[in-house]
Length: 316
Image (cartoon, rainbow, N blue to C red):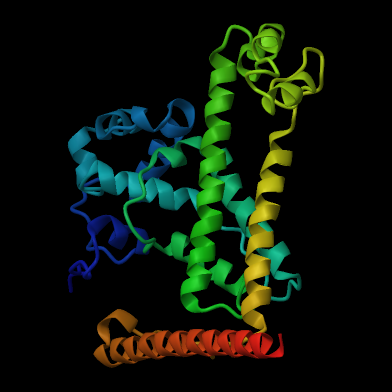
């Protein structure tokens, strides 16, 4: 009996990531594997950047022809998707770990940032849609676990996920670019601005830059020569803390109007969600009900607000 199987209704690269793609047309020696190909591509990207990765370059590093690779990975786009998937193996903590939601999100963001730091080329991969590969979805699942008890809708939880993901990605790209600039510069102080401090101090006058000039003079914009350099981790931590402050303020506001949602019971194992029309219909009905509930809660809050305003006017 043949062990080949047809690809499921997923893009080829995604099916490969899930391990449910049809078996490749392997050569007689079967010396290659998808894992070896992806590892080789990641080594090249780690050393020289994403632009250095090509099917021919990866094949040469493994001692095979380019056509040999195409028996396993059918396109460079699929290879890059598998490389991204290979970097995101989240160190998900045990369920027994007890901590606040702020600490949980912080640990999550630091794990994502760690992946970006270990593989700086990740920020060069364009965002092409919602995550649908297993390691990406494990990250989503982990995040949802950390915010499970917050009185937020499903949409708000996903918006919070997008917010902190974007922050981790943007700051990692900035950090990567600054490190590269410092490495390429003849003098790293050119990148920090320390070499230009005296010239800028004369040009940035209080008359022209009334708010910037005192900050510059105090060393808060361009490092004063001889001063200790700022730690990028401090800037990152400050920004993340302010994002969490914003989420906390929103949680406090909506928590006064709604009780926390009940934690859903886990699904039974081996449920083929995408292939069951009844499950899809039930999920659609749930989303519509949640939307109706949010709209009703909004109308209630507006009615309460108007009632309070009327009472204040009448009392005045």
